[in-house]
Structure formats: structure tokens, C-alpha cells
Amino acid sequence: MDIEKIIKAYDNPDKLINLIKEITPTDRKIKIMNVCGSHEHTITFSGMRSILPDNIELIPGPGCPVCVCSESDIINAINLSKREDTILVTYGDMLRVPTGIGSIRTEGKNYKMVSAPHEITKIAQQNPDKNVVFFSIGFETTTAPTAAFLEIGVPKNVTVLTSQKLTPEIMDILVEDTEIGIDAFIAPGHVSAIVGANAWKKFPEKHKIPTVVAGFEPENLLLAIAVIILQLVNKKPSLENVYRGVVKNEGNRKALELIYKYFEKTDVNWRGIGYIPNSGLDFKEEFGILDARKRFELPQIEEKKIRDCICDKIILGKAYPSECKLFGKACTPGNPKGPCMVSGEGACNIWYRARKSQQGV
Amino acid sequence: MCVGVPMKITEINYPMAVAEAKGVKRNVNLMLIPEDEIKVGDFVMVHVGSAIEVISEKAADEIWEALDEVLALMDEREESGNA
Image 1 (cartoon, rainbow over the protein chains, first blue to last red):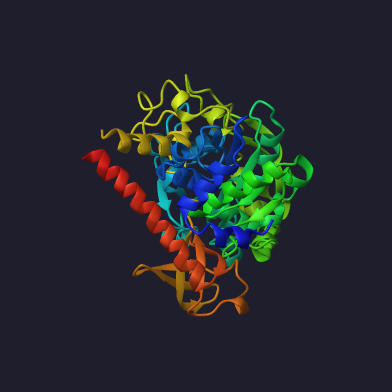
Image 2 (cartoon, rainbow over the protein chains, first blue to last red; image 1 turned 90 degrees about the vertical axis):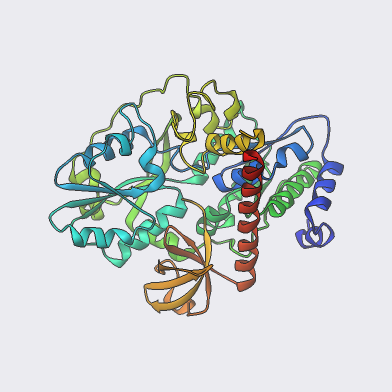
């Protein structure tokens, strides 16, 4: 399939929408999952779902890093921040994620927000008598910057509490779950910049699922959807990359080298989903000195289900936010009950904001 | 957190740099890009303070156009919602 020809022939959103309408088979549902909060953001705010044929389901998957961060890690972070000798540092979204005992913001004591890991160096230098613990959460797009920060060299009073997850590994689980029944993936744009478009090859090759790497513009996502439908119609699943300005097939080799210099794959707990083998990263033995889990002998804490919250189903694409009885009532961005309502990348948060603006409330 | 922003490199003191976008300057970690593959004037995609990839000026413009478009969609919907 020649993407360049499609781009040339269908050079605006209206043409792409018409193409999708023309070629989409009407006899079945087509479930296309995205695994990136920014994709879900564009899809929802552009109103794409209401424009495309009804039988195309655009399903938000586990694309929100704070939504899948395990409760055990967050409670450990809260407890670290309560120590007089410690400052916990993390990204803003993490501060508000609820757990059975509250959030870092409501229950924590000594904590600071950063927007980039290198800001931690200054905090550590200004507080030489404190342990500064960086709560490093997220997918490959945040893990690579953590590795870059470590590579520069960090002050001795800095350790890292890792809660880092791998996207291709969770997609493996999703694809094998027949309850979801995914027909195609829109692969995440910036995770792909790190891991490379080729990281998704296994989905068309092994699972016969069309997979297209896309950027964040509505037109680019429509192009990805058109390519997916064409592949499904022609029964020729393949890997395509329509975000070539940023994503290389082989990814960012230096980023991958640095990630796997410091970290190795390990089984990690995805909130609401459970432990998935080799789906996360933890420090290699030789970098144990940087590992807050070791330094502070942090325990594993059992996860508690949030009453009536269906974030676990939403993260896996088994339910939409609107199916949750808490959605927009007991659970809002101002008062989130579940992790998917916290971050601007969480499906519930995105749906709530888009719906609120539509309703004129 | 996963939202990437294209920025233009204005100063390099490898592995750190200063990058600019829309008149805002930020310190950026270049450690994920080999030193001989980046120079002042280049455009990079920045995630949580690290440049994760060098991109062309054309790609940077297109991505900013897309970001502006998405932000405008949000404003439009939020304005109409608040009207």
C-alpha cells in the first residue's frame, strides 16, 4: 500500500472522512484501539467518533501513565514523603492520583513537583541533608528522560523509586484478550520515537492486526484510520508509520541503550490489571545504590479496589468512561475517585472535559 | 506528561542545552541524542525536559500546527460550553 499516494489523493480531513465512509464494511464492528492519552485527546475533542461510521469503535486503551501506576508504589511514595529526612519529587499528575489512603497531595508531607528530571539536581543540592527520592513513573517517553538524567550524574542524596512500564508488553496482553476483540492498533507516536516503529511489527505479523503509528493531528489520525480500514478490507494487515517526521523504524538507539544500561525488564503490577511478566523496568543489580526501593526497604502493599470504580475495565478497553456509575457524578477531575479521572491523559478526564464543554455546563 | 513539544535549540553546553518554543526558553537534556548529531538551530521533540529526537523544521512546524489545532478545538468547545 502506497501511503504517499493516499496522502496526496486525500489531502484534507473531509476527503479522508469520505474515503473512510466509502470503504468501511457495514456488516460488522471494527474496533480500533489507541494506546496513547494524546491520541484519545485528539479523537475526543475533535468529535471524530460522531463523524465516522457508527460501526467503527475508537477504543481508548492503557495510554495514560498515571492511570496504570500501581497503588503500592503510590502508597510507598506517600510514606516516603512523610519521613522527616526525605523529599519526594515527582511529576504534577502523580500528586493527585487517589489510593485507599488518599493521594500524595492529601496525605504526603515533604513533596515537590518537577516538570523535568534535571530539576531534581537543584533540589538535591539545596537540601544536602535530605534524601531526595524521584518517583519515576510512566512509559518509554518518561523512562528515557530518567535514564538521561542518571547518565548526567546525580547528587549522592538522590535515589529513584521506579514505576516504569513498557507499552509493547501491555499491547501483547490486550491483543490476546478475546473479550476486547481488537481489530487494529493506532500505535503511540512518541513511545514509537523511542522504541521504533518496528517494535509493533509482531502485531500484524503474528496476530494479523493492522498497526499504524500516528501523530496527534486529527488529519493524521484520520489517515491512520483510513489505512487501517484499507488493510482490513484487503485482508493485508501490515505495519505503517504515518508519523515519519518524528518516528524512525529503529527508534532512538541511544535512548534504548541508556534505558537498558540502568534498567532491566521485570514483572510489574499494572493498576487494576495485575502483574504482567516483564512489562516494566527496575534497576539492574549494579545500580542498586540508586534504587529507593532497596535503600528504604519498601514493602509491596496489597491493592484495594476503589468501590464502584471501573478504571480497570476502561484501561483495558472493556468499558467506556460513560459506563461507570461514578463518572461525572461522584468522580470528576476536581474530585477524582479513580486514576483515569486524574490526568489530562486519562480517558475519564478527557471524556468528562469534552462532555462538559459540549453540554454547555 | 507524554505530550511532546517541538523546540528549537538556541545554546548547547552538552549534554545540556537551552531550547525555545513560542518565545519560552527551557533547559533541555540532550543526553538521548549523540553529541555529533545535534547543533544550535536544530529542532527537537522534547518530553519531560529531554530531547527524544531531532526533527526537521518542517516537522516541527507541522506538529505545532497540530498542537495549535487541538488547543483551538479545546478552546472552541470549552468556550461554546461556557456560553
